[in-house]
Length: 261
Image (cartoon, rainbow, N blue to C red; front, top):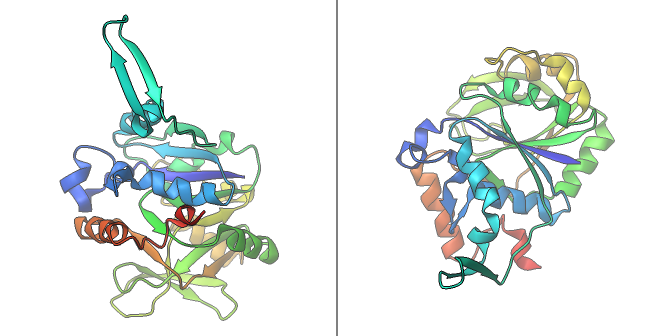
């Protein structure tokens, strides 16, 4: 199953870093947060990635083009026709497809532009700025058991985000505006989608996936939430980046499940 990662936004709320590189390439613990997200999925055996690029997408392309150099010790021997020797080569079992989905394209437009790469199969979708210790196997099983077009992971981070109105069984009734109240469930990414989702998308680059498409799926009773109370943290601001680095420095980064192997 393919994993689609939305990595094309401008990242204006963390402009201290994003003026130089796209937000998913901002580092925590010495590696881009995009790398952390991919490692989370790879831990569960999902290694086929589609990255939706936009703002400074060339930075992402160059990172993967030189991945061995980023992850290995290297000797440059200029006395031997500029010979390069790679030591301690680190290889990931990844297949990474990087698609330029447009500089100012909204989330719905970005997803629509990778339709041909999905091959009419179910796929996973998440944002390029959030990590979690969610069990991907449990999420996928929940999605299959409920038989909806779309499952999104609902988390409770506090009052900074738009709120989901959920029924007792997890069905999403509607979306509401941002709220200050504690305990509101919000869309934390880590979604599982059926190919029928593309029926709700059009070619409008300004189409926001989280608005009309998801709202219509909710009305059609084809959208359900996987309520998750474990660790989840986005990197929306510089403060969030500092917090994530503190988790790593403390030796207790809950999302780094691969470190326990």
